[in-house]
Amino acid sequence: MPVDGQPDAPSAPWRAASAFTMGAVGVLCRSFLLGLSTTEVHGLDGFLELLDERANVEERQRGLITVSNHVSVLDDPAIWGVLPLSYLFNPDNMRWGLASYDLCFTNKALSTFFTFGQVLPTHRTKHSQFGGLFQPTMTQAIRLLCRGPFIQPNDPPEKPNTSVASPDLIDPFSAGHLTYSTNGDDTFPAPSAYLSRRHSWIHIFPEGMIHQTEDKIMRYFKWGVSRLILESDPCPDVVPMWIDGPDQIMHETRTFPRFIPRPFKNVSITFGQKLDSDEVFGELRERWKRLRAKEEQKCGAMEVGVLNDALKVSDEAVKLREECTMRVRAAVLAVRRSRGLPNEDPKVGLVETYREEGSNREGKKDDGSIVKDM
Image (cartoon, rainbow, N blue to C red; front, top):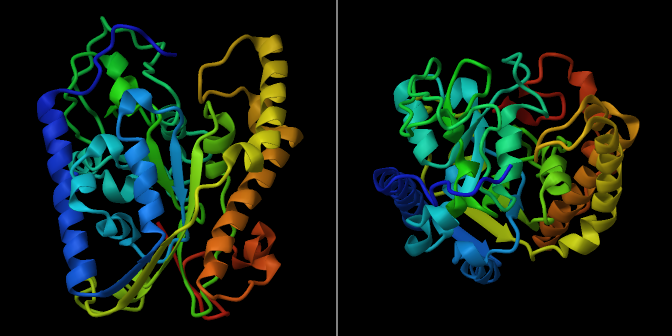
């Protein structure tokens, strides 16, 4: 819950390290996209206007979600290289992302780098018992979109927490109420604990997996994006995007040296228009609020981003997430069509279509597409 008297922002050294990390990576991506690739960008002016409107943190009225297809391991951060340098060095007005815990947070160096880069550690169900739609990082993401600050109610300020079990990330704060744990043993800085992060910008790849295919279709969208939209207050702005070309820079069939991006490829990044979130999602959010109010009458008020069992798995809650997710996917498809691509077969957006893959989801599929769990 919001708590008065908390620091407005992390320490100056922390902010400087974050600005340097995000800016340096942004410069590298910008240099590659504009110097070693043929890159075209559509809709950027409108998106920059939106970021400019959000530049003053105290005046922000709602969070921002950008959502796109996912075609390569470099999609984020590469796509943000199209932003001007002044934006790249301003973490307060840059995106927060989600990345796999078992890939990006396995040691102190990686954990520090990605945390400074405003990336949240996310457990994948296939690789961790702590994964899933209701893991603590999703709570942090929802709170980042809201008007903070938020602290952990069960971790009071007088309880110090300066040790980190796994991953071994140095805790730069002096008290546990400014941190959170993803699995009960590790410790991460809680970004939503600061006024400077209120109504933040979060980018999400709802496919949850890299999907490379010649006909440029998307897999089904997972429900995490619906939690961000339904449970944030007020409804965030939503900007759909379409990216094409990073799959050629880092195609999954690439040979040695696999870690080096391939230059001289064609890249296209399209920012769609900001959705009228109240119109697109308003009715769904009203239904969600009524459902939540009904449950709170039974069990008492719940913290932002925290749900009881009924709000997790009841038929009505599941239906709301399905409808919301499909509306987000439709918005991304509209941007896809604006690039001259034909309508896709509706069944490719259904989870039932991919259940035939079984447990072996990665690799080349019968339809020629290549899937990578990220």
